[in-house]
Image 1: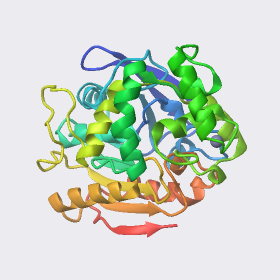
Image 2: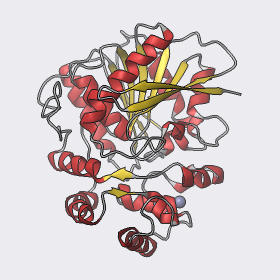
Image 3: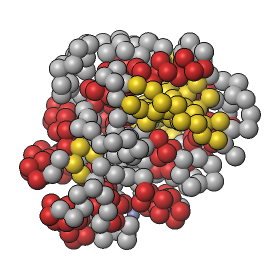
Image 4: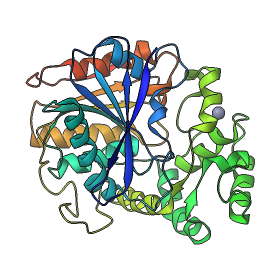
Length: 355
Ligand SMILES: [Zn+2]
């Protein structure tokens, strides 16, 4: 049975964040691996009720496992964050803290969705020189969505932003801050009318929030019943500040700075990446939140600048988060990600497809 220890750390702008250090029964013989969650969830998203979670698999493989609760975490007070704030203030401080705690000189990272976009920003800006290998799921430098989601992003974000400063999947169950306000009640009604795919209000509201699909963030058949129930408590508020930035990035086809913060480029694809990290870009072919072709575009962009170093892997029967939460992910996706973490730093990269 693994134990979890909370290690507080302070972001570059003074915000209080934390790391969760998960320890198994054996002493890790490999170095630290940092796991970075997406928007509106928390570090716990990597520990669903499945027979073998990705965290368990990392521990079994001898890794020293650290989960980062960055400013988007629902374990922390809601703030009106942007990807730029996380790239500049959160991830460099998290990496520094893990290295200080472990005495290691470098670490590896597994990054998901908006943890991935913001961590990739940070790496590309040269702020993470101690990170030697990165496994990125779902989206990184090139957020690509279907036409319906593009339209939704362009039209709905400004409109919704007029009536609320956040979207909260808890509203789908009539819970969460502001659930009794008319805007939240109206959106809940809209979700009830348009999403009939299951009886889990958080699952349905998350689909409404994050893309175009029924559901969006996973394939129902990939989740066991316990995980589908567990998700009710794992999704909460995301500020409109994030959706505004992502709408601009989707329109541009790649990540753009939303706030003029020092040390960050205005356009993340305009100059070669200032990182030596070896990226393995992974994606579910059936992702209805971000299209897998965006991950291939990011692989091609990195490969253009650093030929032969990076890799791209596709999971045919997977969507967005079921890459980590799926009841058969231990069989289908973990081996690819574990192999990427185990590869020596100089290993030649390959491009391929996995089932
Ligand atoms: Zn559902």
